[in-house]
Length: 144
Image 1: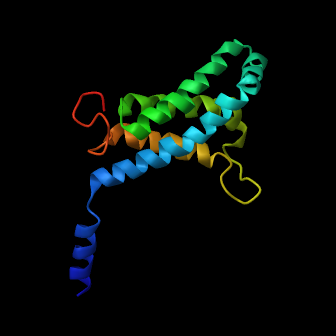
Image 2 (image 1 turned 30 degrees about the horizontal axis):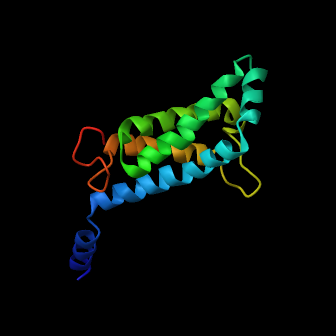
């Protein structure tokens, strides 16, 4: 009885392409909020952090590629794997800029202080390894 119930549940939930779509929407869609904040609010504070570390401030505009362009491509399923790798790289840079001191810390509510960075990094890697799936704009081309 239990075994047949588990088999039925497994059959019902075996929709890998839909799971890939949900992952793309979660990773790309949620990161897009971060990027839109920087797009409309400006990247001045990021530029300031870069200059303080001895780097040129114009590099801050790269965050718009990693947090706006790449997430849109991921959500749409266009150039999904390269876009996911760009997002993963963006999370590494974000960790190096603001997260290294928080790597072994908890925040005020007991969560890992860098859990959102890690979520987006691992989620982007998962998208990069699995691809866009069937529910993508570029599903029938090499561009997905």
